[in-house]
Structure formats: C-alpha cells, structure tokens
Length: 258
Image 1 (cartoon, rainbow, N blue to C red):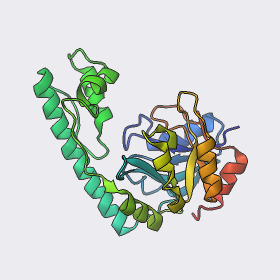
Image 2 (image 1 turned 90 degrees about the horizontal axis):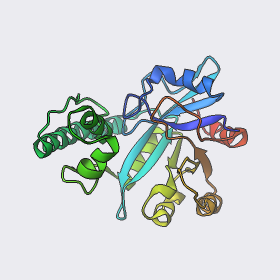
Image 3 (image 1 turned 180 degrees about the vertical axis):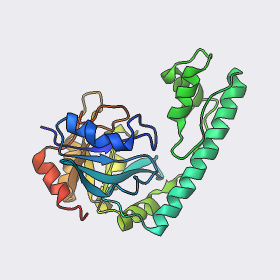
C-alpha cells in the first residue's frame, strides 16, 4: 500500500496542482506524506518538512544535470537552501525564461501563429506545447513535441543545465537525501545507475507505463547500501499513483531532519 508519494510537480513548474493544494490531494489519496519536487525550482519558503492536518509535506526539488552520456534528473529531499543552490536555481530560471522566449519565437515563425504564454519562473516546453495546442495551429500537445519542440524538432533550443558533479554537490549540501529519479527512463539505464554510489538513494517505485525489469535498480540499491525512494511524477491533480509503502517510507523519514 502506497503511503508516500515523493515525486510531485506543482504550478511552480509544469504541474497543474497548486502547492497549497498538494496536502489535500495527498489526503484524498490516503497518503501520509508527499514531496513537492518541482523542476529546477525551490519549494515554497513555508514548505520544508511540515505537518498539514495529518499529511507530512516534504520540501524537495528535481534538478536536471548533464553527464557525458545524457542528462539525468536528481531528486533532493528535506531541502534547506544554501546561498550556492539559490544562485544556481536563479541562473537556471533565467536560462529557462530566455530559452522559452527563443522557442516561442521559432515556433511562431515556423507555423505563422501568435502564442499566448507567460514567461515566468518555472516556464518550460510543456507550457509552450499547451500554448501551441490552444492556438489555431493544427497541433495538439503531443504533436507539438513530436513535430516542433522535441529534442529533434525544428524549434528546439537546448538548455544550459548544471553538470552532474556540481548538481550533486549542491544538493548534498542543501538536502538531507539525494536520489536518482526514474533510472529506467534514460537511454542508457546502466550508465545512469553506475553513478548512484555517490548518491543516497534511487527511485525504485515509478509509473513507467510499461513492463520494466526492476532487478538492475534493486541491485544498485543493494550493492551500494542505498535507500529506495518512489513517486508518481505527478503533473496533474492526482497523486499517489506510485510511491513507497510504510517500511520504505519509514526509512526515508528517518533521514529527514526537519
């Protein structure tokens, strides 16, 4: 039984659930705990490790980092932001905004349409795809990625993301626990898992949407004496689709100092 969903996105990045509504969504799902892990964005100042009417809300972050093989996502939990990570997040948000402006300009020129989009903190390609889907253009959300703004698309713009080494260092200084997110989603899961000895945990429970062999993940956790984290990677209103059971969450909770 899932009691903790440790991977939830809000309107502070590309989710549709407002941060102040996360605890209620978790309560409806019968959860004891939920973590706010927005992309490259610190949680609200009032969220660290708080009890909200019986639901523990954990402040976290999902940080995209680059390696020689491919970008990875690191999850940090129990975050107490340092000046260094605040500075890096500010830089990343400026880069996100400028990147989104460039992508939108390319899309508008490419398909001759004006897009209605706000360029604020947390903006990313999902916001652009939604704007495209709302426009008169004959592209839905998924088609926008497939034909325009996906990694191989004509309107794609790369981000200036943090290196793996720097990102791991920043998270280790600011967080109680650092985990590798969704290890089986990467093009080379083996290369991703080869780096976990430097971390505290690996995301074991995750809704991949397909049959996966978790044995390599379980082996990496066991071989490196790591914790297992888990969550739904929720971007909508529903949480608790995947996560940790009581024993696994208890082990994570014991590492959180808030």
